[in-house]
Length: 107
Image (cartoon, rainbow, N blue to C red; front, side, top):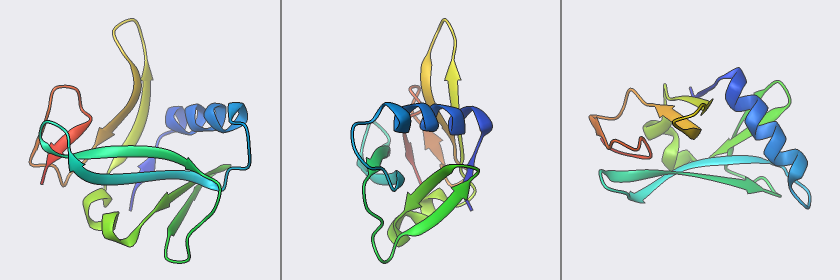
């Protein structure tokens, strides 16, 4: 199961509030690419697909496709904001290696 930290939940809520249009949830995905083989994707969705896995964290809905479930199982999604960096961070136990930016990994 995927975990979304309170900091990430707050950031997602802010993005949803500022979005122009209806939002059914935030899709977290994994696709081929990045410097390590796989890269994470984040996208606000206005509809839930029939086969989506729907996870609810307080007022935040996260959507995952069944194809991505195994690669995201146990993953912790956090949001950091400091002088050095700002953005979502992924701690994924399925990653055998990750790039320095933390946005891609190999499994």
